[in-house]
Length: 341
Image 1 (cartoon, rainbow, N blue to C red):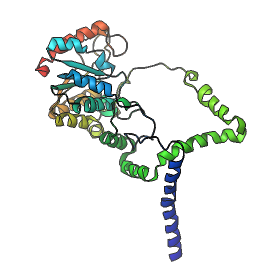
Image 2 (tube, helix red, strand yellow):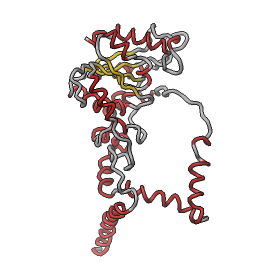
Image 3 (spheres, helix red, strand yellow):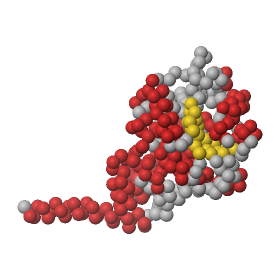
Image 4 (cartoon, rainbow, N blue to C red):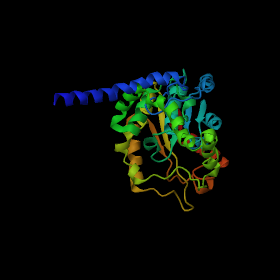
């Protein structure tokens, strides 16, 4: 019995210790120089684009009083120069088409809050429906230009969403065994192995044909593009989602730097007869969201059902026309004048 226990202990010890030898292999093979991601728990080490220091410098030199942050929903609604004139303040628009909430968080943190903006008074974020609490995961590389060398809070939140209760275990194992670095050299070799078994001399050509011709992007079946999908009732439990989202951290960053936040829920594309459909669950979610952000000192406005935003102001999807942008900016300055005071 004692011998069996010792044997089992040896097997378990070997299972834990032997993989540590891969650390030495990782350091000797190509890929060793690749830097660890600013999101080390959820991303494999990879080359990254540098932080956009030029953009940070431009914002700092502008010294705005207000910034508008968001994707095309913000950019197609607010003309910063027009809003500056109408509010008699300095407004800068920090837009990125198709950007996720994580991008907005990093813009707020790295281009605004921690960028020596001495005159800054407020930041305005535009969003759709439940986007602030359900849009958590991001595509690798999409945040490079606004991320610093380390983004521990963002890494923690994304890891918890992706890995759940095991995020801390995963983070420790990744740091200890470097299995993500092992993947950099092992995966290409495993991909080549079937080709080498069939015809070793032409393995590279075979792999190239699979990746760049047979399954290239332009060879895939076309599908009908859509705008951001409408929310489902399953995603509209605000209390269940908010603490797993970036919203608390956005509010924390703003409070720590005395930045007043405004959250503006845009109206989705209306019908010819009036506002877009809205479920009872979405209405309840919006009420809960408003109560939460206002309790944390933020300003909130919901554009849904606004009679001055008819279908005639819309272009494609939820985007406004150029004339609609002028009109929206004018209405925004007038309706939210107290936020700019």
